[in-house]
Image (cartoon, rainbow over all chains, first blue to last red):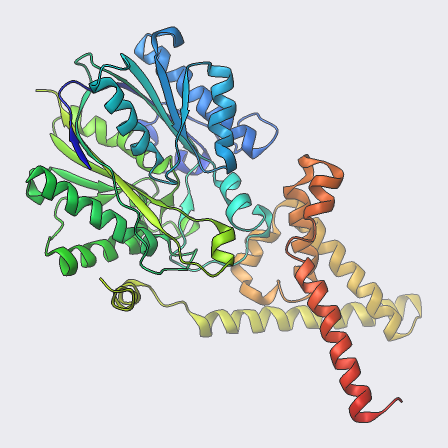
Length: 329
Length: 147
């Protein structure tokens, strides 16, 4: 499903990151960074709650709004029952919708918000996405201090939260179009190779977006995927050309941008719901405002990984949602 | 694209893990751990004037303590990453697995947190350790009789 919008804008964004991202090359573009993974909280889960709360606080102050100006907040994260978003929403107290598409959550939230604003149901919306490295490790893999050896294709969950302020006021970056992705499952069971899990979903969404909007791949100055990582990026390029005959140019992946290239600590690059929006709202929006890119297509990719289903020997499905963003002329 | 074809495509872009290198690392570090264990056995039996069998128990306790302490201090996970399986397979790995799980769930209550999760990783080692000890013990009696 592809939609086009006339009157939806991302007026303001807020980004907040943890210590690993702070050491990365994009640090100067983020609004706030912490040196400690607890963020002054008692546990990692509570730290993630704090990340969302703070990102919304920063967002509202940057946009010079109060919570009473916002009609709806749409947010998601990786923790079971969307704990981080739900607990943050309890304090923020804006009418709340929780959404989940794993690492594609940020764009799902943007699509829901943009549709509401375009339809006139909401005047303004706040969308958020967060992830916490240790919180995710604890839930999906082994205890953090265990640190068992991992293969090179592993991705490293980003710690951070990113929020965006959407409204029909013509300011900031324009949301031009969106494509809701189809869930794909090509039989990959390797939980340490999420790039391979998600690449077909990304390819399918890019293909359908281009087909539905009748555009060529070079219509966009930059096509950027969420968190495929070094190897997933190569798989996507290969898959895209063999399956659809499309050669991806001007293409990058936020997983490969958020950390220093060749940093072995993060294996194949970043991942998590916060990865794509952190890079997009900070570095990419900055480059758009400076005129380097005019039109971009952001495809957030989510591996719909459930440890229970993987233990039952099922493969991992994935989904990718796309959103077209433009500089206001 | 069919699943098999996609699998080939993925394999083309997936880096090979250095199995030989990892194996050699694990062999050398695991061997070094064995040497260290021998040293402790000799050391305890000499200092405390006890039999090697008793000294072995002392050695295991020392290793478990060191594994737990280093896990708590936050070093062990980094060493495990470098040593590959050289530190996980010996008793230090067992202690580390339990300690790391205990640390992870320490804020979720003594019973519902630490108690329920401490054996999350190490539990299967105990279960299959006991089962296989029983099976092989039985096999030994059947083959060689009671000694």
